[in-house]
Length: 148
Image (cartoon, rainbow, N blue to C red; front, side):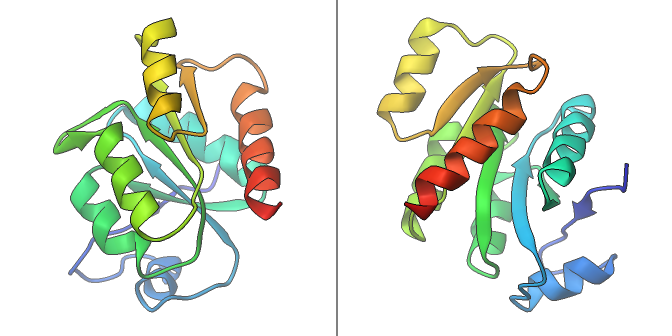
């Protein structure tokens, strides 16, 4: 797997795609991943690449706020809890720039958490680790929904 793009707000771009992202480049479909778990980041990055996305790895809501206004984003995949917030803040930020589907994932996801995430505007809420093909199917569905 190609390593996911790492984005450092306010810092030097460390990868060619970071330079394009920081300047609003549109060379391909971008998918933002907000994850702290390195295993989840790698797994999600691989799945997104297979779906034809350029995965951009972020780890905080602050990075999301900076990054989301600088590029065309097709989908956001986020961990339930982040170092500086949670998926609820990710949903608020994504709504502030338009309709970007947000898929939430959690190791502890239960029915009540799922219902709350959907009620708050998440496209879907999945338990991690994902079942085979589950995230890919959800991301494709999210894109179809956003295009219609």
